[in-house]
Structures are given as structure tokens and as C-alpha cells.
Length: 110
Image (cartoon, rainbow, N blue to C red; front, side, top):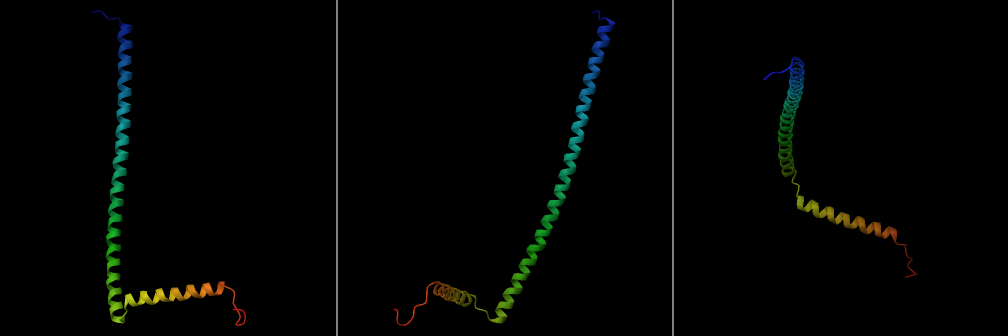
């Protein structure tokens, strides 16, 4: 089959342009993939740091809970009784607040 030189050069130029376009597309995909890999690496490092911080703080909270229980036992604090006294104090406080809102009656008016 006979192909003219102009057609050959035109086809060759089109093929080279397509090859360049595909190469640029592949290079862009490689750059994007490299960025994503870097971002994922940073995320993994941050997650590891956060997990370590959570473990450290959880341990600290547990240690403080133990110290608080030991201090409560040493002080002889009865939590059930303390809650009961607190509820009774709240009731007295609420009653006093209601009494302040109602007008005072004198002895002869009732």
C-alpha cells in the first residue's frame, strides 16, 4: 500500500501528539498518586500519635480514679449518704425559693 509523505507525516504527528498527551496524563496520575500516598502517610502518623495520646490519657484517668477511690475510702466518705443529703438540701433550697416568691401573710390576715 502506497502512502504519501504528507499523510505519513500528518499521521506520525498525530500519533506523537497522542503519545505526548497520554504521557502527560500518566505523569499527572503519578504526581497525584504520590501526593495521595504522602497524605495517607501523614494521616497514619497523626492517627498513631492520637492513639498514643488517648492511651496515655486513659491510663492517667484510670490512675486518678484509683487514687480517688483510695482517698474516699480513707476519708470514710459514704457516697449514697452524700447523694441523699444533697437531694434533701436541694429540696430545702427549692422550698425556700418558693417561699420567697409567695407574698408574706401576717398573723391576723389568714
